[in-house]
Length: 105
Image 1 (cartoon, rainbow, N blue to C red):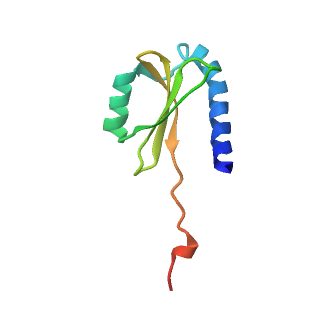
Image 2 (cartoon, helix red, strand yellow; image 1 turned 45 degrees about the vertical axis):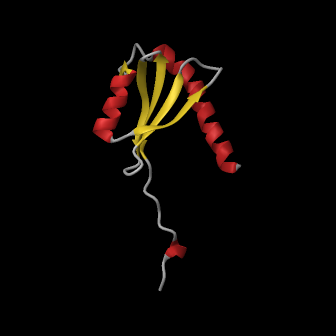
């Protein structure tokens, strides 16, 4: 339940920021291109694939999360119009820490 609430809070913040972003996306140096081209680029260059999609009645557009499950890299993309997408964030997960209880003596 705690993880679900944390996830919901994160997506709520992202959607609120998305409203501001959509108005500024065309005027700044934001990476925007045709969605299918961006999907192919993420797959070929970073081996990132779609893992989650979020929509909201509060903001236009849709968020897509692409992730490489091996390396932990991820890219957050907003679909601003049908067929057009912009990268709004990217990064890398922290490496998993080993469970100290998993070691045997």
